[in-house]
Length: 234
View 1: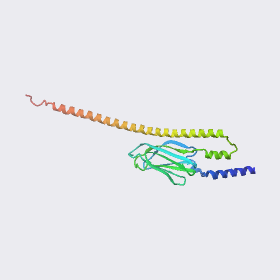
View 2 (view 1 turned 30 degrees about the vertical axis):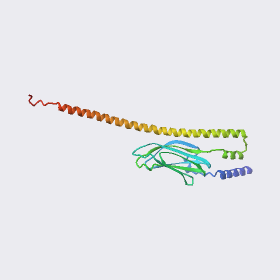
View 3 (view 1 turned 90 degrees about the vertical axis):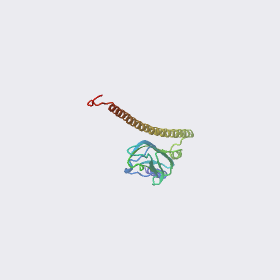
View 4 (view 1 turned 180 degrees about the vertical axis):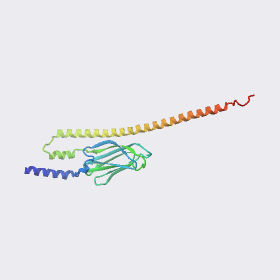
């Protein structure tokens, strides 16, 4: 029992020194953790800000893609001020565009904060499509864990795993490009709906004006040919 306790203590100390992951309390239970990618839409209110946190290990490739789909109210500027900060609070990247991509290498293990600020519109909200996550290239960490484990895999199994990992990374990059294309398609769809409503409104207005002008012309012509029966005729 004493030997088992010493082994557990040594292994826990080794893991803490190698990964240096932060200890989380109950207040951090609702933060993003446990998945490498997320894909959803959010509405940022007028002159407001929405922030999200995503956990990432060291030596990872962090990416964020966003696109403003439509704006409501009197919002005329579709640009969105987006910032990404490290767990220490350092600014990693910032954008002030309607559509942008952010990529950088994670150097610290912890929660990275992403903030979306709708400061360009004081009286209108915007709907934003988000796609963010972390990609871990290579097998450095898995190889270290396999060397520390009880089982040692042979070279054939290792090469198969590397090939599968490369294939998964390629599929994941393809999924990112497809997702970005879907975001553009959604934005074009909302633009077509907006143009359709604009054309319908103007067509209805012009039709009403034409009918009203024709009715007024008939009244004028009718008065020109109208005779007074009380006057004597020649």
